[in-house]
Length: 260
Ligand code: NAD
Image (cartoon, rainbow, N blue to C red; front, side, top):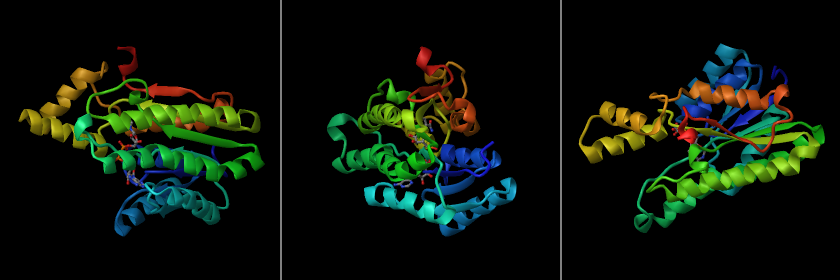
């Protein structure tokens, strides 16, 4: 269904983004992969997408903590593939600390990567999407776009912010064929989440498995972590022709967190 489309997925060298890149490629899109990776890892990811799904893939190492790099990422992906039809703003980082101990540097970096970069890539991709009267923008938010959790001030602010940006972009794109939606994952056991589980294990002096179990029991009504492929399936739907009238929504894929 995505044959002939080009998808740019930020933060797709790991976790949720990698699953999104694979799913879009398996449905016919060429993919621009972005995120940190050694040259060997990046080559491995690109080769496996190309071999498994028969689509073109390229890795772009742009650092999204820099707004100029975020714009350059769209320009470079466009010159490599000729176009960007689907933009998935997925790169995200976390830092956990109490408000009075939260470092300036972490605040700025989290806002830059989780929020400002999504604005910059959207602005850069806008003219070509408008000219073709077709565009799909999906932002990876979180259940923390709706609720707070202690010690996550920058992350919670960035995720509330990306939801506001999503609604704004949806409104500006609605009449010109561009949709913009957010997905709101609950706990997915990626490197980002593992770091938090490890910290919990250390704080409570228990094993990683015990800490993971506690997280699931405390937070997830389904009593299990979500698989990255489940998040990717939601993104795929929002990028489909069938979803052309769905814009400005926040889709929870969260194992029931939002109903508690
Ligand atoms: P991850 O750590 O596995 O992947 C993050 C990706 O972003 C990596 O590819 C990394 O290289 C990239 N990245 C980080 N900083 C970057 C930068 N400055 N420039 C370019 N790329 C950068 O994490 P994940 O869990 O897959 O997270 C993906 C998204 O999902 C994030 O926006 C995160 O906030 C969100 N999310 C995750 C969970 C969860 O439980 N894992 C829950 C809700 C939302």
